[in-house]
View (tube, rainbow, N blue to C red):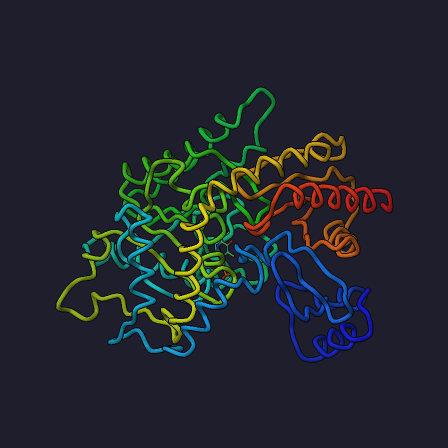
Length: 444
Ligand SMILES: *Cc1c(COP(=O)(O)O)cnc(C)c1O
C-alpha cells in the first residue's frame, strides 16, 4: 500500500523500531505508514497520500497537527526555557498551568503533581492514596478496586488495576492483585433492564467489595463516563455520583482516570463535572498538551496534600520523574487551555457533535451494526460479526485506502476526532466510514 519513498522508510523502521502495541509479524503484510508531515486533521506520507486522523493519533490531538497557536507558543518557550528540574526550582509555565487547572476544578483539586505519561499519573495516584492513608495512621488501607474492563496503562502498577486480559496475562504473577467490581457498561443490560439498572447493579457490586474489605481499601479507580480502551463502554453520570457516595461512606479515595475522557472529550472539560462531583485524585494526560509533548499530572485536594506536610522527610511524597513539569509541555498545555477559552471549544463541539451524530444515522441503523453510542466527541458502535478474525486490522487497512486513520478495538468501530471539524467534515467522515465498513463486510 505504501509507495516507494514511504515504503523505504517503513522497511527501515521495521529493522530498527519495535512498534508499540503491535505483533510485529503482522507488519509483514501491512507495513507501517510513514508520516512525512501533517496539518490540521490530515497526516501526509512521502508519496502524496493522505489520512484523516479520525482518532486524534491515539486520542491525544485536540486542535489538529502543527497547530499555529501551539507552534508559536512552543517557539517562544524554546528560546526562554526548555527544561529545568522541578525539585527546588519552579517556572512560569508549570505554575500558570497548575493555577488554571485548579480554577477549572473549582479550586477543590488545588494541588498538581506532574509526570510525563498516563501510566505514571496512575501510579502516582495509587501511591499517593495509599501513602496518604498511611501518614494519617491508616496503614491497613493498601488495596485498590478497579472496574471490569478497566484500562489504566501498562506499567506494572497501572496494569495491576487494569482488567484487560490481553494486556495482563503475560505478566500474571508480576502484578499486584486488585479487586474488580462489575462494569456499569450500558451494553450489559439484560432483557427488560435499563442502563440505569445496570449502573445500580454495578454500584451494588462495588458496595459489596467495599463492605467485604472495609478498612483495607485505599481507593476505587474509575474511567469516568467512557471506558475507552476496553471498547468505548459508556455509562451515565449517575454512576459516578454513586461511586463518590460509596467512597465517602466506606472511607476510600476516589481516583478519576480522565487521561482519555478529560480535556473536553466527553462534552465537559472534566468528565466528572457531569456528575456534579469531584474525585480525590484526577489524572490527566493525552489531550492536555494538545498531542504535542508527553505530559501527565495528578490533581488532588488539600486534605491529601496536608497528609504529607510534615517535618519528617519520609512523610513527604518523594516520587519524581526526570522530566517532571517540563516547561515546553506545560506551555503547550497552557496554549491548549487558552484555545478552549478563546474559541469556546466546548460549545463549538456540541454543534459539531450534533452534525456528526446525524451524519452517522445510516450506519447507526445498519442491521450489521449494534449499540451505536455517543458521549461528547466520542462515537462508537459494534460490528455484528460471526467469526471474521482480524476484523480490526482488515478494517484499519481498508480505512487507510479510504484516506482514514481508524483502528477499531476488536469489533468496536469508534471515532475520536480532533476538535477542529465542521459539518462538511462530518458528512465526509460518515460517508468514508460507511464505504470502509461495506467493503470489509463484503470481503468477509
Ligand atoms: C492511555 C490511557 C492511560 C495510559 O496513558 P499512557 O500515556 O499511554 O501511559 C491510562 N488510562 C487511560 C484511561 C488511558 O486511556
